[in-house]
Image (tube, rainbow, N blue to C red; front, top):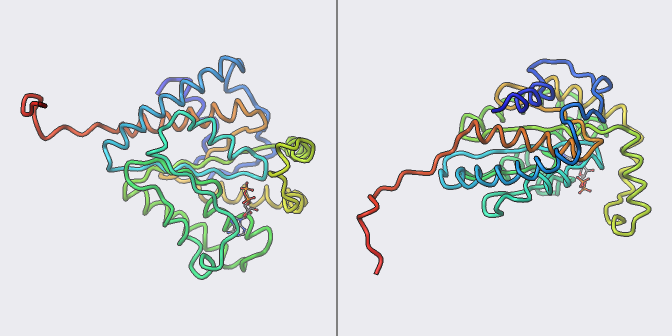
Length: 274
Ligand code: ADP
């Protein structure tokens, strides 16, 4: 890991138990990187590095990486996936979005659908929203009793520990945008016919609850950032900063995992191909 990578990680990682005040974290912060053009080129290079490392992970076939993306509407979860994993071979990547639970999903506990979607060994799994909706939308919209939600922080930590102890490395990213930036992005969805499909009037209802969501995020960050599954707060008003930060951390983590091509059970001279 380079010094620059380390400093980026240190700046955005939430330490276990740390009280994060989102108001004090500037969503427009671009101090992690110098220049937009240079950073975009570096992100493309990182995406290629991620592909090379993913190939090794796939060949090794014994561990997995789970990338969890959370953020308010328009925070750029889809855009992050598109930019960070655009060079990764589709063979070894799965993307799972989690929307309003179906009837079948509601007939089980909230982690049931999550566990079923966790990446198989050798692959990278990306969650667009996740089990954290159980302490975010369900809390803000009062969809579950508060007493049940309160128990979930510990349950989630235990669940994620279970996953990491069984070969899955977990990275969690909160894409932190400002309310003004969200306004602009929602307006674009209304104005640009190519973006109309992205506009969901329900997003306006959620916007009314902005402060409550920010509170719920802060509690989530404080209670569920652990050594085994850390949260990162990514300044996300500038898309190029967001992409670069996430790509840097994904690449550094894969490098740390250091997946190895398996050693062949035969010697090069053992076979001849006619
Ligand atoms: P996105 O907004 O992520 O692009 P959708 O338009 O499909 O995708 O929205 C997903 C919706 O599902 C969000 O409004 C989110 O709050 C909701 N959702 C996800 N998980 C839950 C849950 N456990 N309970 C209630 N709603 C949920």
